[in-house]
Length: 250
Length: 212
Image (cartoon, rainbow over all chains, first blue to last red; front, side, top):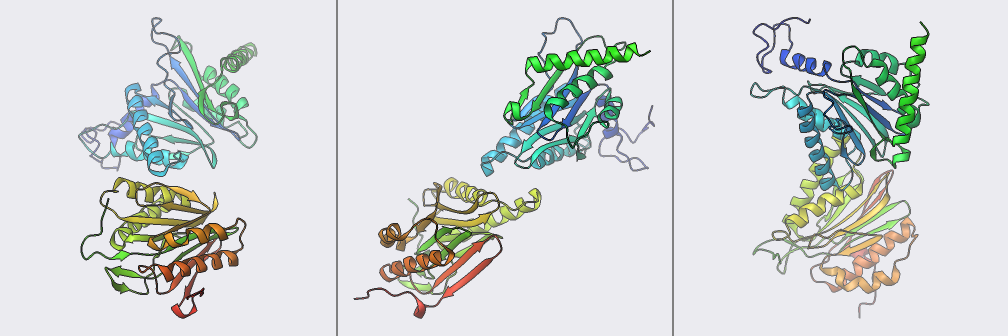
């Protein structure tokens, strides 16, 4: 348990004596309780994966997806409060469309990340609003190639070769560090993403989950799209087999 | 149809831009009129809006200066935020948005010429209504009406730098000799990947043709 704010944590416009804004730090807690999200940038595209925890058997499979499309060339997934995620994706779509309208070309990766981060950070300045309870992964391909950014609730953002947020992010990041980004292709990354999601999923704590898998790759013609069923099924089959192998090694 | 207001300065004008292999030549006369009074006989109608992007202004002097200033501001901000030089297409898009959205209040005919690493040399023409036309060469202003035939007959693709410069000089000179709102001197700017070179042709060095 982190330190308690006691009086300095009631609003985002208050600093603590040691220079922290507790509301923003608490927002990160919302992220930590959410299903794992992974992004992997490859030499020919980007892959996004999400461990969608299924709370009820009544939910329709493949509905309520968290991975969203912002523009044809941009994918978006956020760990944390789902309602905040829908709101932020809506704003990101407006920014992307506004850029197209002004400059008559698709928004570059650097600019969409910057605009999303600017919007998120605005909510950390005032006591009348609360910060977004989201860590957002933005995947896109523009004229300069594939790009992957992650934006935290504070608005801070960095570019990554691969990143993970949510419940199993620590374990996922350890696995992602083993990948060779100089040679990795989107087709290979799909398998790794599926394997890592299955690996970090905690069977004892959360029973049911669905794997969401999307990419921007040569096979999807540079557009953000759901990974085709046959490729996804094969990736999941290999992921489960890898887990079984690990268990057998005991 | 927008009209010049009483006392407003008119860039009567002949303006022109022409693509060649390595760059673009932009060219203009130097006369600004207020009715029949020549308010400025050495005007510079070639305005730089970014390192390698120029615009040629015709119509109302005030309107075109205001629009060019706004585009210059946006392009500077764009360059700094995106950490890359804007393309000529981006500049043309910004000009078009301003001219079209304000078509009732503006009288501005603009030609944009420049070089960028994405498309190389490009020329765009934005006439009064705010439509956008990408062309290998473009002419504009009141004097341009007199030289359509000459330009169509003498333009060819694959011109060298010297040929493009001579083509522009000749065309603008012919227009100046027939159009009362154009005259004075000729100003050119040659935009290439490496630099921008400005050339000034004084009145006594203009190319001459049959004068009768």
